[in-house]
Amino acid sequence: MKKLIYIALIGLLMAGCRQDIVIVPPEEEHVGDSVPEKSQDTIGGDTIPVVPPDSLPPDTIPSEPVVQVAVVGFYLLNEGNMGSNKSTLDYYDYTTATYRRNIYAEANPDVPKELGDVGNDLQIYGGRMYAVINCSNKVEVLDAGTCRRIGQVDIPNCRYITFDGQYAYVTSYAGPVSLDASHAQIGYVARFDTATLQIDATCLVGYQPDELAVADGKLYVANSGGYMVPDYDSTVSVIDLGSFTEIKRITVAKNLHRVRTDNYGQLWVSSRGDYYETPAKLYCLDTRTDEVIDSLDIAVSDLDIVGDSLYSCAAAWDYIQMDEIISYYIINVRTREPVSTNFITDGTHEQIQIPYCVRVNPVTRDIFVTDAKNYVTPGQLHCYSPKGTHKWSVRTGDIPAHIAFVKKLIIDN
Picture (cartoon, rainbow, N blue to C red):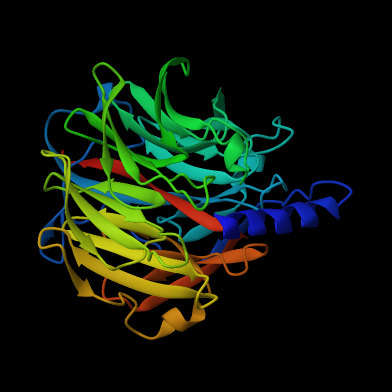
């Protein structure tokens, strides 16, 4: 968190040198190879799961018979430097192999301040895209097909978003950005209706809650306590979704961050440690007993779970070594053991300065890794084959951080 504030100060200083905010014009670049819109129903021997498309509302999903799911593209949210209003949105179109930068401004010319300050999360649900804009204190709601703005939900210091049924759930630090522990407030989760975009309830959790995930009628929230240095929070709040009340807290480790579920009733939670004596680790919880059942000595900046594989990348800061510790792991979530200590197999990982986000195409299994570089200049997006060989790279906005795949149902007529 100290490094986060340091980066923020750099961003504020850079912004202060400008007379006006620089608006980045939209750009387009051809990268990779275009692919047919219709995907195969098996990839590498693995059956592709049939899932509801993110680009269609639930009531339009046909009942007979769905045989394939295609990923037609993805959005990438660039965080931008804190204080500079430079969060931007990019889009990659698989059918044309075209990467388009800063598409929000072009799609929404009537929005004067564009997307906002610090893009902290991006998800697609029910045909809409939700961009959590941290320091602009809002969740921006967009049409997932056109990127046109639908509205916004005002939530102070909002962090991450997830969904269940008709509701969206968003973590909030409640108070402003500050490392003054005396001013830190208990965080909460805000619930809003995805149809009306109205907040109808909040639930208090721990200090500075970050990622959250739904499993078995419960909402699990990682409390970081990032503003409480050195007395970080170390708990996962468990919320009963029916009553929307916190029913327990599970003690895990200091400075929790990422939370993801797998197909085995397990919850994967990352701890950033204290950057000194307590190392970053990855923990596994059983959602049936709400107990920690395993841990791995792996730092995690970001992770993605596809099938039985958990992909993680890390640039973990260590004040003892005064350096970023870089890693790229694949974990088998069933056995809870590493199967690869570097999923980039051709040596091109040496070209990445700060791995920041990892996502895996659920159909092709191509691996995407973003590079935040020095945090204050444009980053890069790298695409790798399922075997870990480099396919293509493209320039992004500042701090490329979040990827959301656009899926489409393919119906066998």
